[in-house]
Length: 91
Image 1 (tube, rainbow, N blue to C red):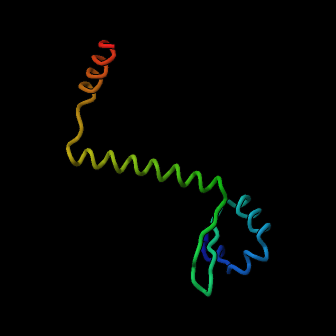
Image 2 (cartoon, rainbow, N blue to C red):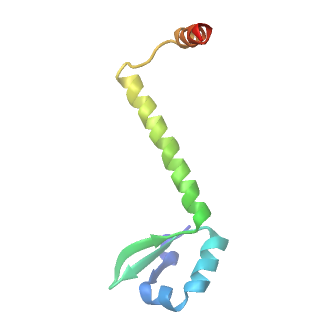
Image 3 (cartoon, rainbow, N blue to C red):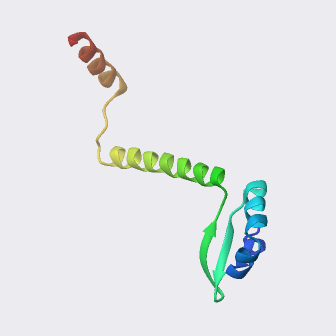
């Protein structure tokens, strides 16, 4: 994706809103909207947005896991499984 091909002024968005929405859905690539020559917004189709949000959530989970490993907040898998088994027996 070449980002420079997807930069449009806000006047273009206003004049071609329906076309822009169709293209966003079909191409699944974001569009940068400028105002007074400066980038002000990025728009994208809903499916791409949802995929981005899911990816961000997974990256946050990975970062949390990495931080816990660095802080030594881990235990061997065998110990964790044994603790879970003991909990289920007590119920």
